[in-house]
Image 1 (cartoon, one colour):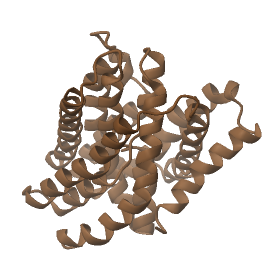
Image 2 (cartoon, helix red, strand yellow):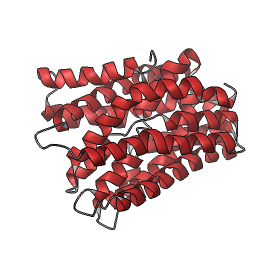
Image 3 (cartoon, rainbow, N blue to C red):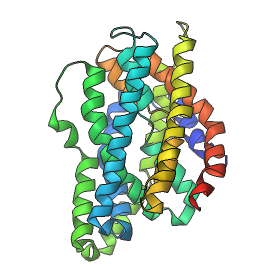
Length: 309
């Protein structure tokens, strides 16, 4: 609880600042550009350069593969569940699938690992960021095609600051060139990168304020199934894989952390943009966040020790 309450407090502060008018909607685009394309690349660079775990190319690619397979499997399962409960395209099937399958593998997980591991979090955060490449590749290709229903996507999606920062940093680590990066560069990226987590979590809070509307009663059956799927069934599958896969223990711990994450808000943004059901996506996200307050401590307390931690 001590690890997750600060995360929710930062999200709540974003909600409160929107309500008070301190963070106005007209400033969102500028703040988001700074958060995503400047502070996040700095955060990535600082946590990847010098990360000894990632010097092994095979190990790094393994982390990326785990992220891709996990996201792909989640999308497949959620699509089948949406079909089983008779959701149809135009009635929330696409939104349900992507919103439920796409856990908050970004800033929520980064913040959780940073708080949980404290001063020893650097290597695990670097591993998480590398793993997230796989999640992003599948989410912004398969997930994007599902929720947009357009049948096409643009490679420009991947030409953003975070992606570029990851691949440049990994290239420097794999070649050993990161050892020659000046200390002043590392100091700069550290200071600027420290802004990334709170800034993005606060933006997350403003989005919840904007889109969490109960003017129209939610479909509690759909929200309940999505919550059970995201916070119980899929985590159980993740934990089983973590226990049986013959992989490095740190990768097993990473899978275990992925199991506890609630849904992310990005799916709501895409649903609104492509004529989906953004209110459903936000309701699913908030419901899983509420449940995760109880499930995260349980998994970290009782499941992690099964891996020998």
